[in-house]
Image 1 (cartoon, rainbow, N blue to C red):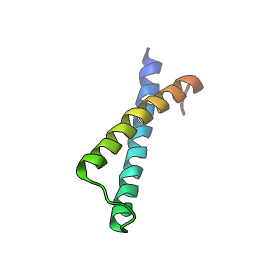
Image 2: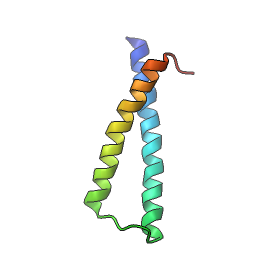
Image 3: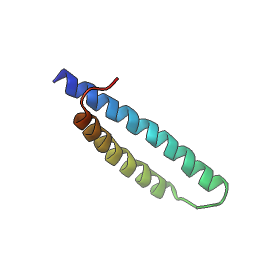
Length: 68
């Protein structure tokens, strides 16, 4: 059980890192006029990516086993 919590924590950590990179990409896309995002669209994209990536990374680490 302790191992599962450790793996889940790693998955959430990686999800946060991916989300921070996405925030930077969205910021630069808006700044360079490559795209125009509303606040609603931005929050929706971030929420979707955070939830999906947290589950994908958790699944990946569970399949892989231990993390180091």
